[in-house]
Length: 239
Image: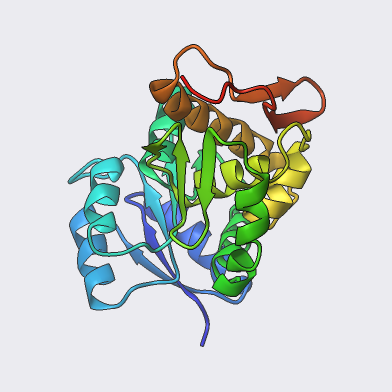
C-alpha cells in the first residue's frame, strides 16, 4: 500500500500542489482544511505522516499538534507562512519532525517526507544494538538509556523529541568528536540534504536550551565554526 500523507492546509492552491507532488512520488495524499477534520481523520485511520499548517481557520496548528500527540506519535511536518525563528523553535520544541516555511519547493518537501519516513521505519533493533556502547561512551553527567529512549543530564530526565534524542545520543556517543551537519543529518534524520542544515541548527538550539535549564552555567554542546558540533569532554562530574 502507498503511504498515506495527511495534508492539513486551508489554502486549496497549496493543497493541490502538495497532493500532486506527493501522488507523483508514490504517496497517497489526503487533504483536510481544518484542525478538527485532521484530528477526526487521524482517529479514524492514522496516516504515515501529517503535513500541518500552523495557520488554520479553526485552531492554531500548534494546538492541533498537542491534541494529536495525545493519541498518536505519527511524524509531523509544520508548514507556515511565517519565517520567524520563534515559530520554528516553538514547533521543534513541541516535538515536530521538521518545519518548512512558505514559499517552499514541493519537491524538497516531498524529499523531507520520504527522509522522515525512512528514518521512522528503521528497525528498533538497530538502535538498541548500540546501547551498551553509547551508554559507556557517555560522560557521567550525561547518561543515555537507549532501551527507554531517555537521556538524563546530572540526574534530571530531559524531555526530548525524537530528533532531539537522536541528536544528543549521537553527540554523547563520542564526546569531543566534531560531527558535521551532514554527518548529523545522515545519522539522525537519515538524509544529507544541504537545505536541511537549518534543521540541525534549530534542533541544537532547542537541546541547548533544555540542557541550560539543568545547568545554566555550562556549555555542553560546543560549536566549531565551519565544522559542526561536539559534546564537551570537560563537563564537571557534579554541579
